[in-house]
Image (cartoon, rainbow, N blue to C red; front, side):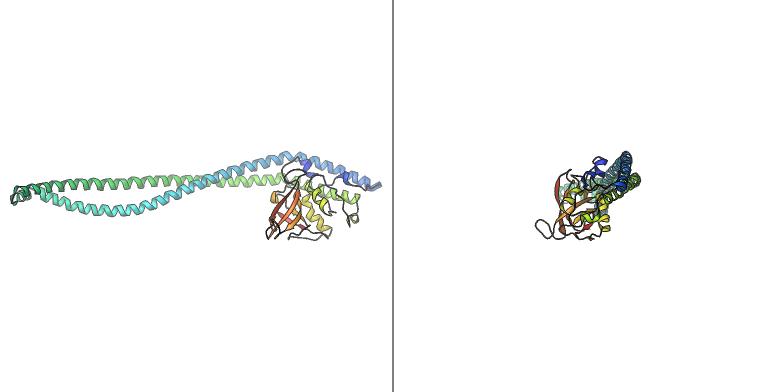
Length: 355
């Protein structure tokens, strides 16, 4: 049984006994006892309905906490990706810095040589000697031009070295600032995420506590249904042919219309009740078996869900290791649909075989 219908419909739906389905009416003391059981059942049902608002509130609070935690996790993942990208950039820049530093060292050496050449070329004695030793006017002019060119190279080299050093420093500082900011953000998000995870745990515990009384009352109602069934029909009545004593349109009613189901109770009681009546059970799907789901397993409600195994793979449309089953009230009330699941799905409580 799936979804969140009105609680009354849920309890009398996926597994509970319908009084109108009983054809044998006991008399005398048995009839009085049955009436008392039905009165007790109605009282418990009222208590169950009264507990529903608190359980719904706890469920909504848990959903809100889980949503906030998921959002925080997404932000944390984004911050971690950004930090990883910055670290990668910093690693690449470190290699560039090493190369640039080697270039700077070489440039400084060249600068030293050019500076010395410039000094020697522009000193008074050297300049006079360069001019006087020239054999022609053109040679003297060439030497003076060379001296000017050396001075220009010195200035250009100084400018290039300073610009490269400044660029390296600027980029390194920028990346370090971004990395520090991302690290701080990651730390804050991690702290917030841990706090939200704790809140989810607290909300989950609150939901469990709010659901515990409802589960206990549901178990009492299932036991009462079993007692009422015992007063109405002996077990021997189901030895060869079974009647359907479940609420029409629910998963339990559908399965009981497909095969003999002498036990009663909600879907989450079937595996236990069938075992008590001596029906073989196991964890391997078989055609004709009842598949019983844990509460919440594979889309089941908190009172479980049951279906009828149609095929076991390998078969048409069913791969090996999977099984196909039909069900009612999963896709909608009084609607039959089919699903294919792994035979060892964690949502499956077990399989109830025919005798």
